[in-house]
Image 1 (cartoon, rainbow, N blue to C red):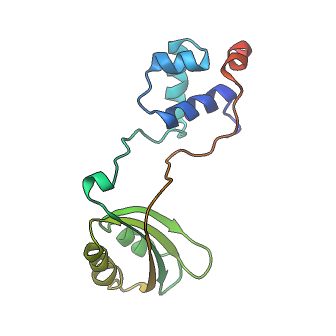
Image 2 (image 1 turned 90 degrees about the horizontal axis):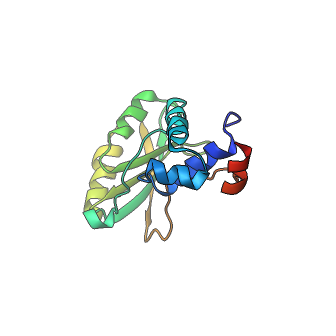
Image 3 (image 1 turned 30 degrees about the vertical axis):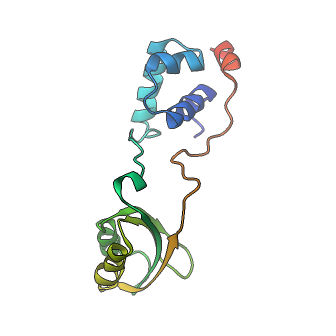
Length: 164
């Protein structure tokens, strides 16, 4: 992150808030000309700071009413790429995290019903030869979720414009 200046950080912050913001609006907000901002966004994409753009779909609106967090312990340590590949193909999977401690992985899955989750855990996950045990926790609601990452504070737009 050392190669990012305050304008880059502000561009990232604004794009996290609204990935559909126009280049003209983005330029106005950071106090630079649109071609300059477009060039900066392209560089942020090329350097891997921006991985992509996506719509955030409401899971409840499409019938995914069950959110579960599943801890997974494997039989031969926690660095099994075969197991990781298998986990990545589970239906409803949103996240896989490697863990340090008693459990090897933490999964976040969304399903349409408790029965669908039960099938996933007991028929798919626990039947894998490298899965030793699992622990499933259900979320009853999700009052706060975000895809935005915490970014360091950027200078205000006026100060940013003066620096350029």
